Amino acid sequence: MPKVISIGKQNFASLRENDCFYIDKTAFIREWWESKDEITLITRPRRFGKTLNMSMLHAFFSTRYAGRKELFENLSIWKNEKYRELQGTYPVIFISFAAIKGNNYEDARDGIIMAVNEAYSEHR
Image (cartoon, rainbow, N blue to C red; front, side, top):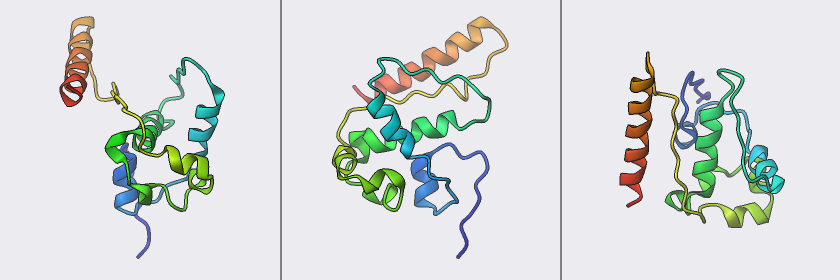
């Protein structure tokens, strides 16, 4: 069966679980991990895949995905034993502001507060 091209899907695990067409960007995990940067800020360009890449990092490092090697098998990151051992070993808080829409400061602030509260509830 041919791979499905999923437009707009931003959940890495869902893309892989549903055998959707995926261009392997897992080398970014190694590049980011080895950079030792204290802060990474990726703000542009629009529709670049920022949320999908964050979802990929979440699926790779989060203990919530421990033992889910099938998400990364046959991808670049899985070729290195060092990274296979890192998969699923860290507590990760993942918050995306992609869906937050606001026509003014208060609406945007309320959306951010709601997203942070949801993340807090998940990790209590």
